[in-house]
Image (cartoon, one colour):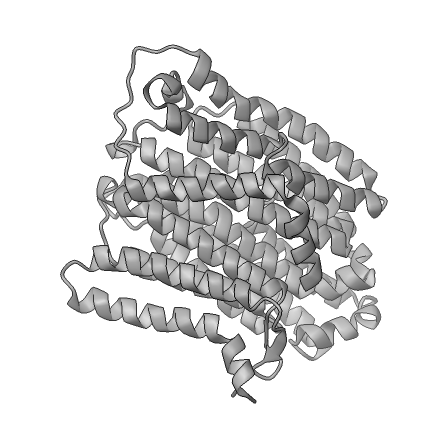
Length: 475
């Protein structure tokens, strides 16, 4: 299975999390306070794997009969997935009590979904991508409806399952057509024959079906229809995981499956498709978000818009675009985790305090939460010197270098529109008075998660070049 000890060492992140899942299942079976134990065990597990992945970023290899890659940008994705899950677990410790869903299975499902994400990012074979996708998706379907007593959660879970299964059908059919024409599922072999295969209509159809399936997963227009309802109906902490870890994993799968195209220049074949859904996603998400009154639905449409910005980096078809996508995914993950984290803290029982108008005058009662939320909103809006600004900057510059200036200009216009609905919340918190006082029960674990997110956003905003250099060195 492994040719030497170094290969086993490179594969350790997946081995550790798989072992962690088995330990968690055992704890859930036999421990009375399994929820408490599993919450902190999960935080520790994700932290260890994330740090281990960053430490071994230079040890690149391809193992398991050339089906799985390790090191390099794969380890950056490993670290991002695990730190995302760690922050979600910290936010969930008190939230689950309020949401009336104190189940140990919750943390086991998060661990399982992260294992699926890691498989997608490390894949060198189409079947490994599919295996990771299904592992992540099945866990997500259950997490959306983790509280069976809430109708909104059941509805969110059912919608996610039905449309997710529909999207999976596109992906499977696309893989079938690719295999039928290329006679292999190895991404390296497909890439080596891509130029000659590009003249085959069935092969191009397979690639487009594969991309359409993942367009559902990244919430790109017009495959976005599940996003607002699922984000609104799911637990707020799980909505945070969907919009960050799930989206990042889908982009990772697109990057690893089409990486050879981006480096060889053959990506021009799929550029028209990517350009169209990028523009539609940016403007649809930004414009519809303007009319939202529920903050989770607003963040859902914001997610659609941000998918559009990220697709610009893919459409650029160069290594600068891929580096920009990875940078922006990191920044977006931290911003959205922070925003949904504050929503989960402010949310009361029975899903109240979720209207945007409820945030009026928040600075008077909770100045710290208002200040943190303002930073997340400024960064999402792309205002310097926060990480969100540099994420968009690198993606737009990649588009310009690829002679797709029109995409960069449209991206800037969409960003200008989005400034309104992000800053509307800041204006409400600081300049709108209200007689209604929110009853907020802050908790130490949740606040720790918020401080980690905001600190990393500021560091990425101050030292964007350093992180971008690390990304470039792995590509």
